Length: 129
View 1 (cartoon, rainbow, N blue to C red):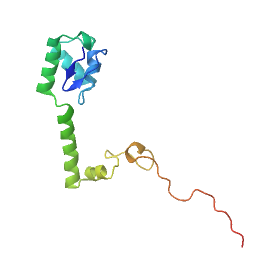
View 2: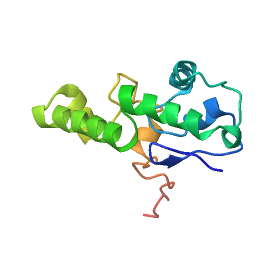
View 3: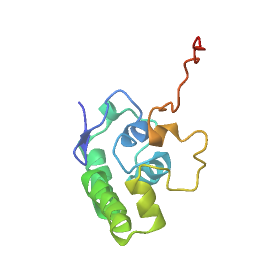
View 4: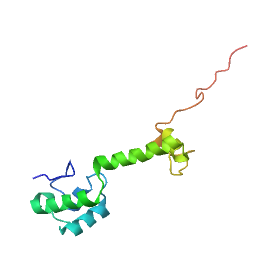
């Protein structure tokens, strides 16, 4: 039985603390906090959870956390606000550059994309005069 939590089907074969991290906005620490509050053993497999345990986990997430689509809307709204007010961080987001102070002379390839070579790399052939 695959459990659905916050609209995400979490893998049935994994331990519940790992499976919870498949939900956007829940990491290992938050997953442990959820399970401690819901009184569920962290190492039990998702397929072995009872409906009551799944219900307690879902209830805690609904009451205390912002996850999945709502979290993504909030984050994209924050980035849009930074762009609109023209802050330094907003400009970095607009230009697809790192916004947290990393160097860009080297590295930063993930953010900037594939390297574009500038200048002629072919050897100039001497012309006969």
